[in-house]
Length: 481
Image (cartoon, rainbow, N blue to C red):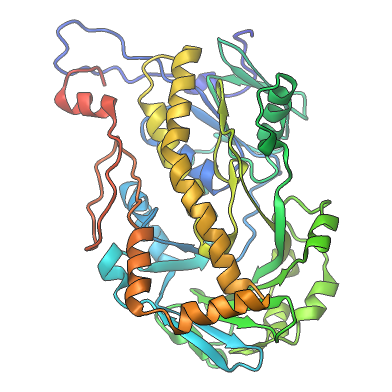
């Protein structure tokens, strides 16, 4: 592999040169050049973290611009400490609201259950924080210097050897680096290309060759600004969350969240049967606007706390409405050589537990920690660092993956067994059980281990984290910084 790099990677290849208490001044270890494919939340957060410590990177995004589609997002204590570390927390709070309860209704708007989240903040230190997904994209993108995100870069192939890794794009450009991060979503070009190579070499587990399972189809959108005199929940200082389940026998459900800016995020879901899910294998692969009038007609007259869902759909820009299939799959192979996968490229979670984006951002944090601790860029050192990332993350992602499947059944499932389970969970389980689950689910709060740590702001326990060897030595003044 030649050393000629077509692009900005080498321009960022620099090192910090101040030394502390070094009796024999030795040069600091070289910094890895990181290629990040995909401008989603995981890829952008990784870029922001690398920017903090001067590790050179470039983000390659296939679209002509970042199109932050989607509707509601919810973040929790699993990632909010990192926002504090990076100085992003206040920015997020300005565009978000806390939510203190979940209200579940039948189609006739008879309340099935109200799940209150009393004591949650006291336990974990943060409220459930909800906002329109595009807002977070804007916050992240604003923190990345101009020129470090390249658009219109569709990756066609990847090559790697002992000296580095290279991507080739559809515009005939190619770029080299030391580490390639596939952060390009559920239909990751990096993963597909890597897996083809591994399959030819008989190094890919058979389970990774199986298709993702499709269980739901969802349409989402966020309205324009509405009149708070008509939609009075917009006056509340917290987000009002309503989930409406269609009548028995129907696979439909829909939900609404109020968000800042006098807007309402809405979604409509349909649970797919086995035959339908298999026939939909041609599924659309992006969060993009597409015409789907038939689905809109199905849910248009669905009741909400604000009249019919169609009223909200009509007040949503058509290019901001998107429909996707909700797949789920936990891949086993996340890394090979200099190539590593994060977020949906490695593990596609159902969004019912709100863990998909959180999990992608946690990936970015742990991967950045492992990259930071690199002391050499030879293939063995890089491979070991990327394996360490996978080893640290996989058990937690597996737990999140299983939790998201169960939550989807409880919240969105319309089979009689799922309806029964929902009734038991929301109406008969003691509050102490819900509190115990909340405590258990919020013990994992990874942070950037080479920045000052955010304290535990709640009364619940936090799992210990693997420290940074390099940062520890730097603090002791024994290595070049």
